[in-house]
Amino acid sequence: MTDINNLGIDDMLNVEGEETFGVHGTHDTQPVFETQEDEAGQVVLTVADLPSVAEVGTLAIAHSAPLPTLGQGHPADEVPDTSEGNEAPPTIGHNQPADPAEMRRDFFKDVNKFGKASGEGASALGRLALRSLRAAADGILSTAKPQGGGKDDATLIYEAYAAMDSKHSEHTAGGAKANASKLRQVIAMGCMTTLSDPVAVGDRVVALREKMEGADLKPKALFAGLVDVAREQLASDTELADAQIEGCLTKTKAEKTLEKEWTAIQKKVEGLITGEASHGLKDTSDIALKISDLVLERVKQYKSDETRQDRIDSMIELGYTKAQAEAIVDKKIELS
Image: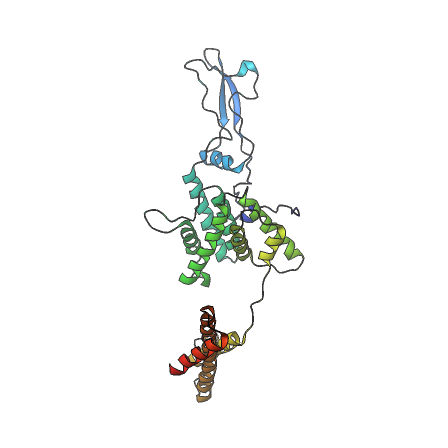
């Protein structure tokens, strides 16, 4: 498999210059230890600068180097007295569990930031998907619906995101439902247990897409591409190869048919007659109305022909010959 330089999901997720954390995140805050002598002449160890609970929890999921435990790295005569009544405080290190509730709150704070960035024209939807992928891999998101009913994570996430920018058309009821469904695919990939690291797949999507843009191959938008990669990955228990990811990121031209072209024309003519098109132009002349009737008749004919063919195919599946199926279907159409 071709190695791609990791552009880093963390770089993609940075909002307004703030630090973000995740499977590949890091943080430089370390506790500062000092030794002091108490009134009895005993040497004790104190912590001068201890990170907050939020920082410790984030460090635990970031896979950064563990914080030193109390007593490490000090001469023997500086190790605190651990006799009864003088026990050292609990250690702080890599194995301290993060608080899932706090991680979830931090995640939704990021969701709100991405929503605000969307209102400024930033490509925040793609970063929302990447952040959701990481959160799912961290175990704080799932595709399951609450047992008592209610909305699943994908729906809640997109509603929170859209609430920060209600001006865009994709936030309409239909658009929101569609995008929540797409986001659900990304979350599902993040929850896959057959992958060693779902976030690494997201990293490769970012890197390969950047490579395609550099070669002027015009890949899909990050969100659309990541959704298609997720759908492809969900169908396989093994990590997708670079070629498969690039295939998901490649735009495909929509198939042109006469029916589609006439349908598009019919919509344009209808918009001219009603004046409801975005340009606001209106034409209610007799000729315009006649054109609309003719185009609509043509579209209906295509749909009728399509229905006819579907009926014929169904008859053939039942065991009739093509000639028999055509005769039976045409007879029914004639009588209807």
